[in-house]
Amino acid sequence: MLDFFKKNKKKETVVKEPKTYSPFAAYVFTTNHLIGTGIIALPYTVFAGGALLSVIFLLLVTVISIITMLYLVETESRTQALMNVLGANEGHFVQGETVELDRLLKTNSYDIKKVRNQLLKIQDNQDEPLLTQISNDSDNSNEDSEVHETKPLLNEKDDVPQKNVSKNDVQDMIKKPQFDITRKYEIIDMCKMFLGKKGKVLYFIMLTLFLFGTAWSYGAVFGSSIVTLFPITSITKGDHCDIDGNFSHNCQNNYLLYIFLFSLVVVPISCLDLTEQRVIQIFLCAFRYLALFSIIFTIIVSMAKKDNPYVDHKASIAPGSGLLKWGGVDLIFTTGIFTQCSHHSITIIAEPVDNKRKIRKVITAALTSTFFFYAFVGVLCSLFFGHHTNTVITLNWMNYTGEQKNARAWASIIKYIVIMFPIFDLISIFPLKVVTLGTGMQTFFYPETIGKTDRRSKRIKIAFRLIWSITPLCGAMIIKELPVIIFFVGICGCFIAFIIPAWVQLKSKSISNIVFNKNKTPYSDYSNKPVIIWITMIFGIFSLFCSMVCSIINLVRKYKK
Image (tube, rainbow, N blue to C red; front, side, top):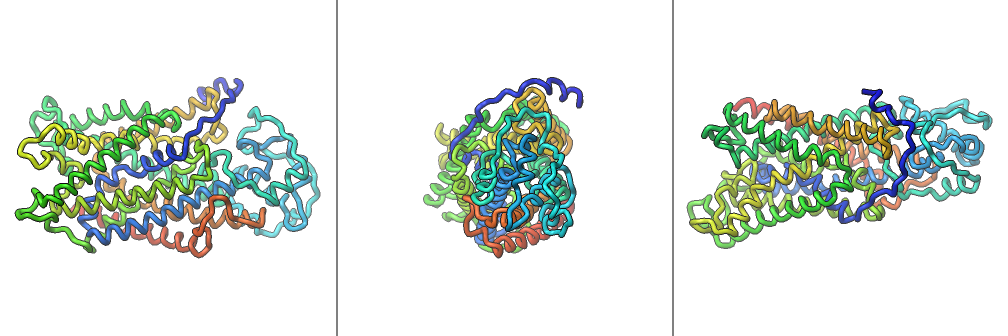
């Protein structure tokens, strides 16, 4: 297999203009990442935990998620400035500059040469985190400026244009650091730079488990939902297929067929880059909002007319609804974190944005809008349906007739828009998760191929995306009930969304202060204060503990039934 990837490696790299998209397209991709299966299950969660308690916790998770996403963007910005000082050029260390930088990168205020050497060691697979190495006393700080043999950051055989670096250029890079992001740095690379090799491995494991489990659950939810909605009678033989129940053998065969058909759609899309998915994702995003508005519109009309089929008397609110239900805290906690976790994709989404100064607004707008949709849809549905709230909320529209005895054409259109929402939603979000997982794997095993357009790099990229799009669906064919997988997904989500972003933010700020005597970037705001970072870190640790406890409670409940 390795020989296959090594073919054509000596061929010239084709230099192409990078494809970009607007901040609006970035907003679309971010919301598509966020509005997945979470919003489908959220109304039942709100009913179980109470409207007020659910909204308060969801708001807290949203605010913390915005802050931690911005931490990752800030860290990427500082990584960019540090790599500029190190003589990086599009992610490669230019060997022709080594001697000059060794002689120039030293000032009276602090030993920049030592910082540079330590950074190169980190890139050369050293295990100790950068901050620890810089803070340690070393006898090498006063060594002369002899020529040192160094390795490129990626691949010493890469065809990289040479560039002369003057003393003034280097001093400008230090005194006036360029924090504007001009290329993509994967989160796994930032973990390696600021947290060391162990930090990189920790993030890699958490990311793999989280995305693999998420993709597995998407496949299972798709197959279960569609076989419940549209069973093929020639296969099911008249058996009733219930998403919340155990499938019969015939229903299971129908389920497997739908998983296979799902793979025929999402696997090819997963092999496309985000810029190539733009049209598909914008269309699916528009359909998603159309379905959500249809859900909101139909419930508001029914509540205004006091025509609720789920109550015996003329009332708008179904019995069983409430504001505070402490018995549902476990569901609120795990679902709330899951619905607003898209941190692992932020650097991939931000890379093609033509105006990166607007990334902060994109993140804030995306998470704020999803919060309002989550809260509005969750509260409305839980109050209207009460005890009849389905775990997959769109199933409540199976018998929608538009307040008429016989459904008219417009009512049937609304009905199918709503019940088809999970299907199109999963088709939209599954490839996005695969792209993130495939890119993470490629960065870990073949970092020299990231951003390349030669045939070998493309083969590696496609191979990883095929592997990580097909294997979760194979898992979904075997197991459709995923309480154990969700247990690991919840734990990994706490690391990815809260703990690791706050951790790399603290470390990158320290390094930036050492090298540049400043840590604020164009993407910094009030959340850059140390007290807020520590509060965020503590919240992440608390979330990790609660997620483990809540997941265990859910597992016990599941197997007691």
